[in-house]
Image 1: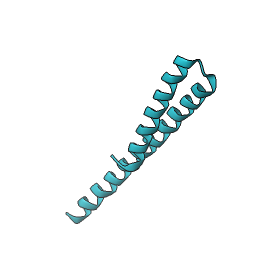
Image 2 (image 1 turned 60 degrees about the vertical axis):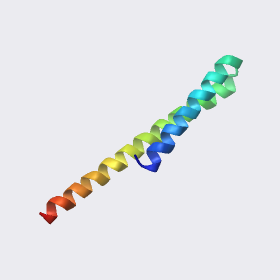
Image 3 (image 1 turned 180 degrees about the vertical axis):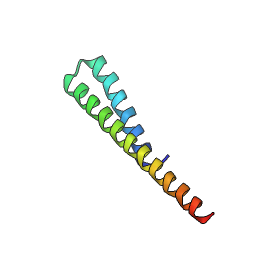
Image 4 (image 1 turned 30 degrees about the horizontal axis):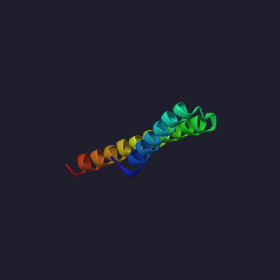
Length: 67
């Protein structure tokens, strides 16, 4: 995992915690923040995963060229 994947997952978890608190307190503003945090985290995590896959593909190509 790279830093984007880790920070994305952390952001999603933060959003889930906020959502649970919002549900307990009936705070709509906090619930909206929670949804936004979860969406942002999902995007960042997906970006990190894609970036890692591209890096792995480049490494594989480099190894194939060396052979």
